[in-house]
Image (cartoon, rainbow, N blue to C red; front, top):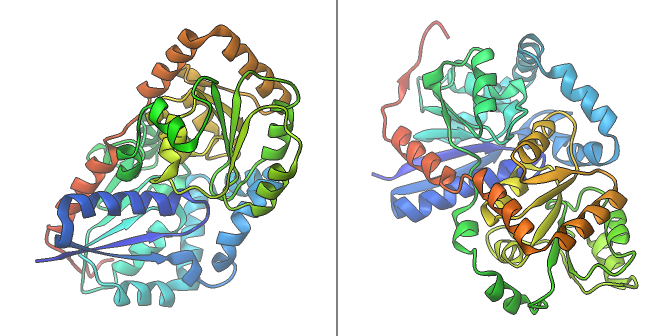
Length: 386
C-alpha cells in the first residue's frame, strides 16, 4: 500500500525547502512508487502578516541585521515562544485545520520552526492523526520554536541542538542527532577536481576560490569581489550570484584583474556539487545548507557574513573545528585567501580534511529511513483531552 508523506515548510530562506526536497528525493530513490508526496507552504496560507514572511525575511536579514536580531531574541525562549505559538494558532486555526483536512497523510514532516506547533495543534483536532516529525534546519544556534515536547520525533543536526532541546523539555528518546539533510543528488554528483574543471573549462592548474551567498544572492558579494579582484591573486574566482540577476549583470560587465567565471542560480544537486568539487576555498555566508555541502565537498571555508541569532553558532562550528575562519570585512577575506594560497597545497589539504570531519553525508538517508518507518506505523486516535 502506497504511503503518503506531507511536508510542511515555508520559503523564508532556501534551507526549509531544500531540506524537505532532500528527504523526498532520498525516499524516491529508496522506496520508489511505494511513497507519494505532498507539500504545503504553510505561512503562505496564513493571514497577514505571516503570509508576507517569504518576501520580508530575506529583505530584513539582508538590509537590517539589527532589526532581525531584535525580532529573533524577542521571541526566543520557552515562555515567549509559547505565547507566539498561541497567537499564531488562534489567528489561523481555521486555515490550519483546513490544511490538515485537505492534505491527508500517513506521516507529516515539518521543516520550519514557526509553523510546527500550530500545525500540530491543528492535527490534534482530527479523529485520528498521522505521526508528526520535525526536521531542524538550523545547525547549532537553534531557535526555541523548533522544540515541541508533544511531537512524535525530532531530527536535530548537532549535539548542541540536541542539548538545547533537552533544556526546552524534549526527552532524549524523542530526538535523534543526524546532521542536516543534504540532497542525495548533490552527494552523488560530486566528482574529481580534474573532471569538474574540465567540465566548466576552468584553468586546470590555478587554485579556484568559490564565492557564494545562497539562492537569493544575499550578502555583499559585489564588495567581496572588488576586494578579491583588486590585485593579482594567482587564482581563478568562481562567483555564484543566485537569483540576483542585477548582481550577475554588474559582475559580467566589470573590468577584471583575475581569471573568473560568473554563474547565476545554480541548482544544488546539478552543477553546484561539481563547482564545489572544482574549488579549493569557499567564501560564503554562514548558511547551514552551504556549510553542510561545503563540508561534504571538503572545502576550507571563509565565513564572510552571518544572520544574527540562528547562524551565530554555525560560525563556531566551522572555526572551532579548524574548518575555516570568520572574516566579515572583504579586505580581510582577500588578505586571508592570499595567505592560504601562499602556504601551499599541503596546508589547504589539512583544512579540507578538517571540513570533511564535520560533514554528515548520511544524514538524509537516516532521516528518510525513519520517516518511512513512521509512515508505516498506526495513526493516533484523537485524545479527548487535547
